[in-house]
Structure formats: C-alpha cells, structure tokens
Amino acid sequence: MSSSTPGTTGKKAKAATGAKAAPRKAATGAKAAAPRKAPKAESHLAMVRRARRINRELAEVYPYAHPELDFRNPFELLVATVLSAQTTDLRVNQTTPALFAAYPTPEDMAAAVPEEMEEIIRPTGFFRAKTKSLMGLSAALRDEFGGEVPGRLEDLVKLPGVGRKTANVVLGNAFGVPGITVDTHFGRLVRRWKWTDEEDPVKVEAVVAGIFPKSEWTMLSHRVVFHGRRICHARKPACGACPIAPLCPSYGEGETDPEKAGKLLKYEMGGYPGQRLSPPADYPGKPAPALGNG
Image 1: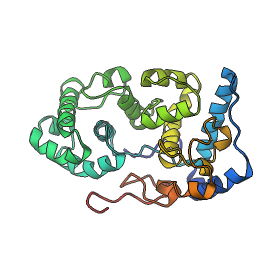
Image 2: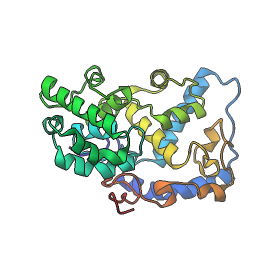
Image 3: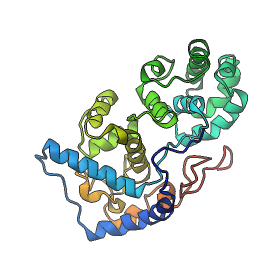
Image 4: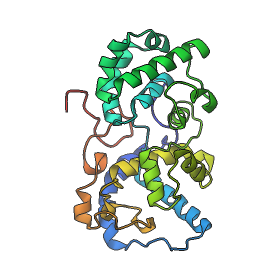
C-alpha cells in the first residue's frame, strides 16, 4: 500500500512550486500586511470562519502535507505510531527498517524474543514498555483479527498501547477514515489560535470536529502538525515568517522580524531534510538520512 496521503493527488505541480515559494512568501508577506489580532469578544461564528480560513491557507502553504512516518501497510503504520511516543518521527523512521526486516507480520512480532526487539527499538526510547505493547498488540491482531489491523476505532483502541491518537492516525492514513489526530503540536496550535482552551486531547478533538466537516479532519491534522513543526514552534515561533500571521490572535509571541524569523524555519521551509527516509513523490524537501548517516 502506498504511504501517500489521500487528498494531495493532482497537486504535484502546485506542490513543487508552491512549497518552494512558501518561505519567501511568508518572509515578505509579513512586511506587507500588519497582522491583526482576533477581537477580544470574538463570536463563535467568527472563530469558526477564521479557523476555516486558516485551514484553507495552510492547504496553500502545505499542499504536500502527509503523515511523517514511513509505512507500507496498516500494520507498519500502527507499529510506527506506537513507537513515535516520546520521540521524533525521524528517529522512528530510522529504526523501523531493521524492525520490519526482522518482524514483517504481526505473527512474527508476537513471537519475538523481547530482548532482541528491545535492542532494535532502543533508539526510540522507553524500549521495554514499547516492546511489551508491540508484542501485545501483535498477539491480539494474530488471535482476534486474523493477523489484520482492524479498520474501526472501537477495535483499535482495545489493542495494547493504542489510544485515540494512534487509532486516528491509522484510520485516516491507512484506511481513509476521517480522523483528527491531537498530538502535542496540534493541541498547542489550536489553543494558540484560540479555537479552544481545552487541554484534554479528547475534548480538543471534539471541539475541532465541530468546527470542520469530517472530510477535512485527516488533512487538517497533517497541515496543523506541519505548521507546528516548521514555523509555529513551541518556544520560539517564527511569527515574522508566518503566512497566516494576519489570522493569528497570538501573533507576537515569537520573533516578528522577517529576516530573523526566516532563520527559524525548519525542514523544507528552511531548506533542510524532512523526517521521512521515503517521503511521497510530491514532497519538495530532502529525504531524511538513515540511522548513523546524520
């Protein structure tokens, strides 16, 4: 199965040109239009309209947005997502080639020698707990689902180490079932944009689901996470290089000088490699290096 994300088909030409131009657009656009802050007493309707406009503009900036975990089938995506807890997608992508070479199926992984699997996934951290979860979910897939990853949320969340976030990642990107993935980047940005002040991921998911049509949920998740990783960083957001600054009520929390902000851009926006060793064909950046090569 291809790991490209549904929704980007037909935009390759736009992706190749728009993505490269985005950093320049962001850096110069901030000079031309002074960002406006959202009204203090913004109505719910006004917030919804602003949120949907942010999503549309992010779609222009990141037409190539995709899951940043390498995978070839639902099982690989499920395993990679479990491994991604408390580490980077890059480190997971650098680790999974050896893992899937050793254990390509749930049956293989369920029968693994724990110490051997722990050594393979050690770079991702918390390797003992993750090994226990992976062997447990693999055994459940083998015994309860015929060795196949189920395509229903209620089944996925019963697997060891699998919560709503992981389940939505798998459903949205391996099965085409719309889902909102509330990771740390997503929760941080939607609060920064004043879509909600909820901290609990399940409550954040429910609020955002009420703002956007279901058809947008999966791609919205990718766009928001992309923006959080590339421009709207946790500690020092690149406000002066942000293409949606006029729509952001938190403008000014980070660097507002366009030139200085431009130096904060990450991944392809800053001319650096992305997190995937095997990115989709329409990704405009450089593939990440394999483990031990950078």
